[in-house]
Length: 167
Image (tube, rainbow, N blue to C red; front, side, top):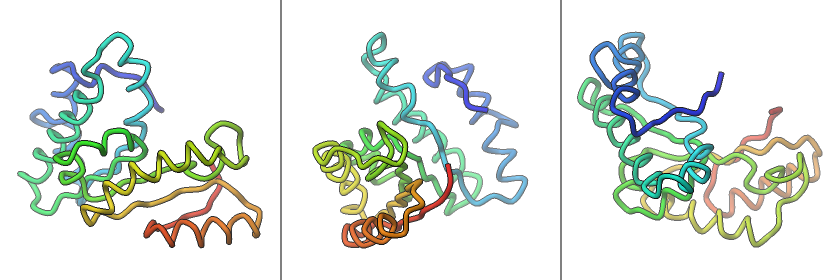
């Protein structure tokens, strides 16, 4: 399941990056990296009470990357969503790519086209990653053939890798 956590708390971080933590167990099982879902889900809400929330998440992702890469050179780190973190060059350089759900459709109403001003803002943030040579995986949950084709053309023109599926 998905749970909100205090990702800045050292005791929580030890569960992930400490001795026999989650990252070590993943590597021991043969995984080459992590796909970090939901890193954006708490940032805005937490930032109201914790102004350092964005930097705290960037730090946590960096610690995960350092732990993984120390144990396995080439360890891949791909956060999903959280594009608001990409305005930091060090963070954008640290990650290997970024996944983005609902860029064009469904952010506010399932399968509905997102407002163009919101899309443009998100694209500008994601282009911080592509400018660093990172892959952007654009995940859209639409099933209409015409919308899929239009989305594919737009996403590929931005240099993003599109994927269409069920939520």
